[in-house]
Every structure is written in C-alpha cells, then in structure tokens.
Length: 175
Image 1 (spheres, rainbow, N blue to C red):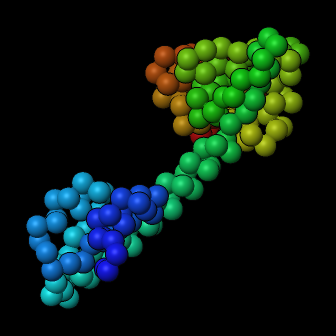
Image 2 (cartoon, helix red, strand yellow; image 1 turned 180 degrees about the vertical axis):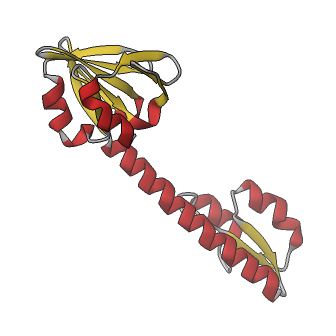
C-alpha cells in the first residue's frame, strides 16, 4: 500500500472485528498478531490454507452472532422491582423461586430475597414469569433449578426446600 502499511492501518481500525493479513513478508507475522490479527497468510497463497482461514472466519461470525443473540435474550429476561425507594434490575435466571405472602410475593434469588407488592398469581400471569411452575398455593419454582422431588417437598438448587401441594401434582409430573 503506497501511503500506509497494513500494520499501521490495522492500528487505526481496531474497531473492525476481523483482520487477515496477506503478505509476502513473514517477518511481520508476530507484529500482526500483536495488532489482533485473525490470521496471517503468506504469498503465494495455498488453496487449502486460504479455505481453512475462510472456514474459521465463517465460524467466528456464526459464534459472534449467537453470542449477541444470547446477550440480547438475557437482557430481555430481566425485571425491575421496587426495593424501598429504588428500583432494582433482576435477571430472571437468578430467581430460584417465588413465595406468595397474601398480597405480597417474596422473590428469592441466588443472592438475596426481595418482597414485592403483588400477589403470586398476578406475577405468574406476567409474561416474564412464564418459565415458573406453581407447585403449591404459595410457591412457584423455576423448572431448571429443581434438583429433587420428595414426598412433600421440592429441593431447589440443592439447598432450598419448598413444599408442594397435592392440587399441583400434575404440574410436578410435567416437570
């Protein structure tokens, strides 16, 4: 390139996610990887080596897209609850179970317990809580956290124990 080297151009354009250097000068290989090169191809190009790089590049973009979709999905799976005078963002994946306390519901997460002014029935009708199953009049659990079902209780995440009611036996069978 007449005015700027490939290494200088890469240094300026670090925001571009993938850079593949194709050159006749093997002495720049180490410096290219220091500039976060995806690959370094030497001229004359060999067909197998080029195809291998393109296959890895396609796989990289597929994985990057899947990671972005997962991040987007996890961002969508959060709720805000009022804790005192502040609102707190909670990831739904952190919620182990819900406990109904008449007009309030205790939300038990892996780290803390919260109490919100809403009945357990109202919460379970919300779209965000569709992944929860009611196992008792006062308890709803996330299916993936159930580790054991006993004669009268459900063990959640290996530590928490909540009762299950006979009226919800069919819901447990579906789990």
